[in-house]
Image (tube, rainbow, N blue to C red; front, side):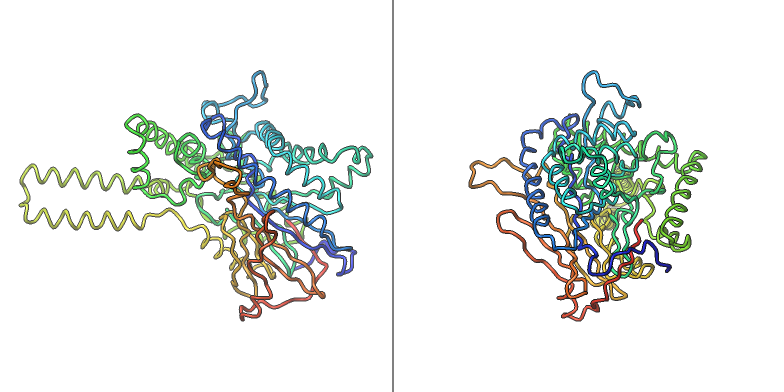
Length: 517
């Protein structure tokens, strides 16, 4: 692979790296579709305090001559999870659709701008601490994830930077100081790569429920003013947010019986409303599929290819290598009609209903003796039970790890770093590389209960995990850590432990070359 972006700095002045992912700022802004959670979501702000104290800690503990490069591996701001309406009298460039009237602002560029400002206002403490971090001379890189895909729009990126500038204070009144500050804030629409050291992307492209067909140009073929929704986006907006009892994990750990239990617990009226929302979600998914096979997709595909070419030219990565990397992406559920039905258990429900009707018909008609019908019914029931138990939607952690193993073959690296699953992990893959999942910082409103006393209050319910890569004696050392403002840092895993345990991970000489995309 050709090397690019060679820096003029000697190896000893290269940055140390700090990584985290999946904070989901703004996921508590759900008043439009989920007003009953507002009181409970007050405790979500405790995560802001945890993250802010961690940022302060690393800002204060920076090594002289080695500024931190903070890389947030996606889903910092939860544009998809927000359910808010524009303020009264607020004029929008892109008028609301019927769906947006029901579920809140959508994915148009001006909607994203409004959401970005709302998230910055709600989570002011985090944005102030990020501004302090950058003011101290450290740099910030945001890799786009599936919940902050709206950073595709320049308006959202500019609003994020402006939120930091606003909180940096008078020190940025000088034009050169502001320019330097803004120059230390970067956005990456796909991945970030330092040759022979680290590769970072969010990881959702390996999850078929969250992947996009044209990630570098995620616009809707039907309405290029808006970003296309993935399978999980539609579930979030149509079902998860408006339904009491459903967590933000949504469909990941659900089966048909879970939905039936939920519907039964909601009563007849609640079950009917859930069924209606379920049907609307299916219709929206089929609309996305029709867009995918329509002539209108050619314009989106051309824009995607243009971005792919720009990345290759800018970072001197061959088109063959980029295409091989992109080919690792999972085929989105929304592009396959039968997969839509199976992922939503419609095929299982239809088969169970049809089988029941047929068996009852045979029983009532007497066409088949009961001595034969009984064993047939038992076999059908056993088949349906087996199908039900095996009809889990997907296993994102395994999918991301498989993707990381392929990436390590395409890009020489010690560490392949992802987020998305909210499950921290550090495991050997191949080619001497280690897969790291950063875990997450988000909490779900269903898991957050108001404390009955100050002594019962917990500072957080999220993993609060992060990764640090520091250069020690000329070699990179990686540590997966958990943060707590009460107890400090807990070490979960280190690259040195991997080497001691014979994982194949060995220190490599630090290199000044850096390539990012």
